[in-house]
Image (cartoon, rainbow over all chains, first blue to last red; front, side, top):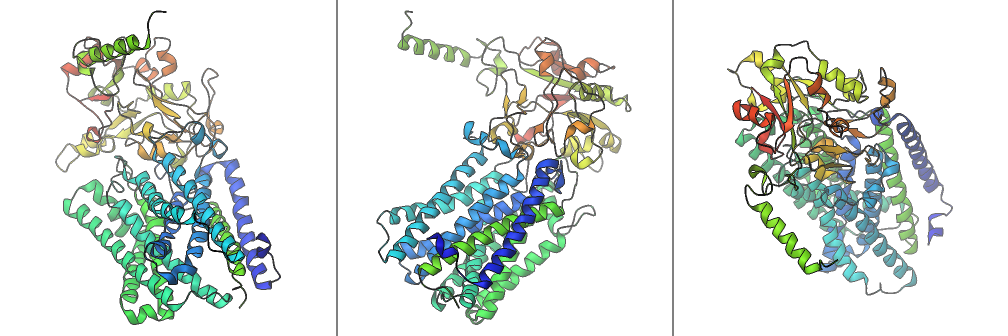
Length: 385
Length: 254
């Protein structure tokens, strides 16, 4: 099957070359980080988690979102999603891999990471996150491998696929719930200590992930013979609409509870994000951009005319994706640390090495998606424009 | 041996029962309490810091210097990368809930010596994914610098900012190295160890011993007759963020 990944196609190989360069730059800076220490990043005593853990959190959502095409197909017999499930599963594999790479990039002593297995600690949510993420990776590798193999041989998928699919649906929910629990169970950090965090994570994931899937399908339409079909895209866009609506609703819930209760140490984090605190407002323009994009996205998605027009749908999906990326991949983690538990403010911004290492990891994900999709599509004979 | 399994379990059950009865086996106030010493002789170490006395000497930093020298704590100039075991924190930062518009602003700005609270229910211990940090029976919250993978979850969970990460190689920031105490490598978390190396030799923590004004008190909280308990009986004391349920065991006499 792997031979499908290598074929004579100039555009494909130049894209791969770009990605490999990005990965190489990231790898070089990662080796610098190994030598110097995490002091090379923008993180600090007060902001002890930053861009890496934020990207990890965001990508767990993208990984979990595969369930939004898998569930309707297997549980509700939505046949038009048949072609999309494999894309969702392969995207999940790439996303989980990026998640794991981001966690490793964030470790001070990565060579000791197997201590998590040698000294398993069921009281630690990180332990459970390791279990569910690796489990999800294995499940999706199994399912996509079985699907591609069956397609190649022209057979129906083996009978064990269905129960494993059911497991994967529950598992997808678990990975993002457990990831939310990393944050929402800490008495020291009032910003995250909210029961709506896990539901909010799931809602934003089920908006951002399928939005990305729509964008990918629209790109594939241009660069390959793969055609998701208008009906499938229309159904996915409705899923994005509801999920984004629920996500915004949850954010408003959060704002009500925090500001009506008037508890200073809960409000300060939100103030830092949206209006700035004691003269510190590095994230304010970003958060308002996120809010604006969310409103724009909802406007374009709720209106059936703009939702079905692929040009405006593209804008809407980009708006959903970046709105949630800013919210989760930038604001959510950092604001938990600003102010710190003593009320002091240290701002955070990723350093250049940190940004390039992160870009390198995204490069790994993009390369995986490229190669895996190429295999899947060439098996179906849908490659080539 | 004539003790069979059944007898052993009966005995174990009885012992547990005794431990539950107040006043028997373990000191009453600790009976049945989570995290209390399980054997009668195990002490529960704690500390009390006399704030007014400490405030009489605003320029004093003897305890900090002694601690840093003994434990090879680096002096890193960049505040983002600092490593701290015991340090001065403004009162309004150490006790953020105890400030207000009409409360003495003089007190709000005064420095408070802060360190690891060696909590009874430490938030940092549960979150560690490698059991590199744990609470000893005598209450000392310990740290294994050789097992720590540097995920910093414990730093995130600690409500007191008591834990530091080695963002850079600390060896370049040591004025002189104490050969009797380990140094740390880049990428691990560290914090106050309540001088467990001195406790093992029946000595009190260095900050307590070196304080030139007798403002720091150390003792066994599980013993109602200990001087520390007597002090806490006589004077009003507060703890940092008591509402979070971490049960900090460093008391501040006010």
